[in-house]
Amino acid sequence: MIILIVTLCSSFVLFVILFLICVFRRKGSARNESWDKEANPEFKESGVEEIEMKGDFIKFEGGEDLTCFDILDAPGEVIGKSSYGTLYRANLLGDSVLLLRFLRPACTIGKVQDVMRVVQLLGSIKHPNLVPLCGFYSGPRGEKLLVHPFYMRGHLAQFIRDENGNSHKWEIIYRISTGIVRGLDHLHTSFQKPIIHGNLKSKNILLGRNYQPFISDFGLHLLLNSAASQEMLEDTAVEGYKAPELTKMKDTSTETDIYNLGVILLELITGKEPINGKANPDQDLYLPTAIGNAMLDCRMSDLYHPGVLEDDNGGSSCVSEDIIIKFVQLSLACCSPSPSLRPDIKQICKKLEEIGPKS
Image (cartoon, rainbow, N blue to C red; front, side):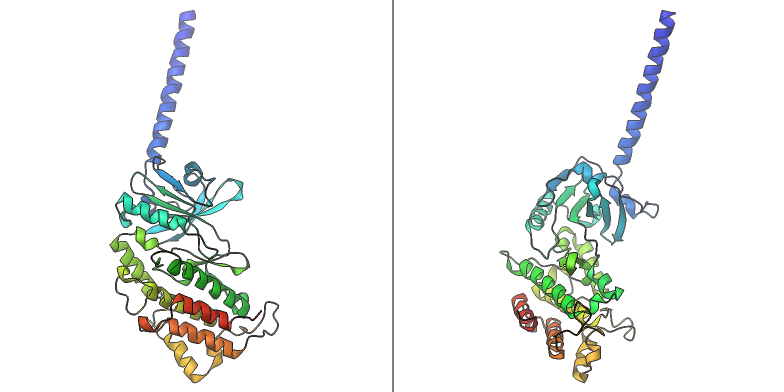
């Protein structure tokens, strides 16, 4: 009986061990699947797919308490896709929310030294109007994951299109405009060599509390290979932001950033979408050509939202039509077809200060 009992117990223990080995092998195999699998139509958009944890996780200011496990195991949802990557909203423990940007291995530059140089640069940039890089994960198969704060108010394009009333108020328009300009000024002038955004548009301006703007995606093209960078530029052109002299992403400059800034300022003051006018000229206001024509006709109703002269309390604002005209003129100067005629970012800062509220 003793021999029989020992034999049965040994067999049961052996069975349990074999079962556990099979379970862990399956889990390991699931982890080895690349995030690039999410490009497949069968990918579940309800959460963030797991990525292998054998890579490097670099932390920057604001991400000191994060761990690789926190990021890669956080439940989340897909909130945006592009040809070169996917955006996730990740929910961490303790009600903390992060924005994760996954870059497809096939779309990024290959040399590790080049990647690390760009990442260290982006991680060092801190400004009240720039989205900080809190962390960066590089996986063994070339996966790249950028970790940013999440901003609940969404992006500027949504704010302008939602027509919730606040987008008509001059105080808020001016506050957002000056924040964007200050953030771009930091990128262009605070480093030994200007940092070119390369893809500045209203969808890449995130809004925080009190409509504080945060520029996102700056320098992202530096992590992409030439084919992905060019595709990014083509997408920007379709949306109406491409400077006329720009043919390749490698030609981006401070002047092309200024052009895009001018389009964003015109979006803010008119509430119109900067569509590609060649596609359907009658669909909406094509910036900046139609705005210039409206200025020549002196039709102020075409230059700003109805109600743009309201203050934060819905009453009459002290801003005059002359100030609105000056704002539009500055925006149009930024959109000059000739790069040499566009003001630089310091000149734009000065002009905005001149037309802003006097203390």
